[in-house]
Amino acid sequence: MSKLLASLCLVFPVLGWADTTLKIATISNGDMTIMQQLSDRYEQSHPGVHLQWHVMDDGTLRKTIYSSMEGNGERFDVITVGTYEAPLWGEKGWLAPLNNLPDSYDVNDLLPPLRKALSWHNTLYALPFYGESSMTYYRKDLFAAKGLSMPAEPTWQDIQHFAAELTDKSKGIYGLCLRGQPGWGDNVALINTIANAYGAQWFDESWTPTMNTPEWRRVLTDYVAMVHEYGPPDTVDNSFGQILRLTAQGECAMWVDSTVAAGLLTNPQISLVADKLGFASAPHDITRNGSHWLWAWALAVPANSSQREQAVDFIAWATSRGYIQEVAKVVGWGSVPPGSRQSTYAEAGYQALAPYAKQVLAAMETASPETPTLNPVPYQGIQYVSIPGFDQMGSQVAQNIANLLTGKLTVDETLSANQQAVLDVRQKIH
Image (cartoon, rainbow, N blue to C red; front, side, top):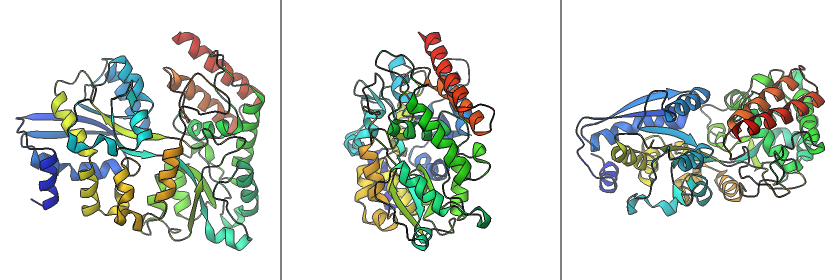
């Protein structure tokens, strides 16, 4: 047994549960794959505990878990949720409260914005596996060739100006790559940050939908123009993964998206531009409120699990400081789950491999889910609205915007359809 594994056993002692199988529902991505690969260490230190993995893509995971929470599907002992679901499901009583974590877990080491976002009434209902905000990636070499200089805190007008200068589709260079694939966690996540920066919002203080305002018209007009003039032709099919590949291949001069991409794009084994990337904050406009998002994929335990004690022990292990140290030892500091613990950003090894670390931490710490817009609103949340039913209304708005991109709807028709979609869902729920 390694010294580090031995230390993990001191933090999470061998409990000797007999013949326990924990059914784990999680998302298919690189960080979760590493967790699966290292989970044999947990099984070694917990004889009798067996981990059964159910790995799904984003959309399938959300549908499967929601059905399970309503009692209509397969039951799980550990589920992967986001900052949207955790407080809402905690309020519903669907998730086990995490009040009795051992002192060795060091809850205070969790980044405060994420700890708050995963809580309901100051009680944690999920533990962050990794966290993210959004930022601007840009090709320093292309900027230098054009004599351009990226500000540390660009505006959307700056981005449009740079995109116009850098786009050269004859050479396969797109000035700006943005998400277009429909989904409340896909195109709407990005577009909401533009909307917040432009002074748009989903509701006024009386909960009246405000999706057809002049501010929203400007958001949609600028978004379509940026995509059509400076982006790849298949934007409506592009989400994080597709644009990550384009950027890593050197085809995107700029990309505004998740901070999680930083570690991947600076890895020379998978990125052709690893030594050419610069980092800036996500763009703002008339306000910085809500201009960069806050998200975490987190692990939670359904309240209906018959193995809650064992499940809580596992998620504490998988989100612990010791687990991060184990990933650093086995895979390298460049592969540790980012954005979850303050101690990660104090590690010299991480700082040496992550030139973007300070910017990511600043983005996480300055995200403003409690004041997401220029004007007061009755809701919280940046790239989503933290209310029941947003997943439904957000999905409809996302499809309307995708139809706008492909020419099936005009801007006026999209504004009207979005207003009606939000109104219909809101009335249905209330």
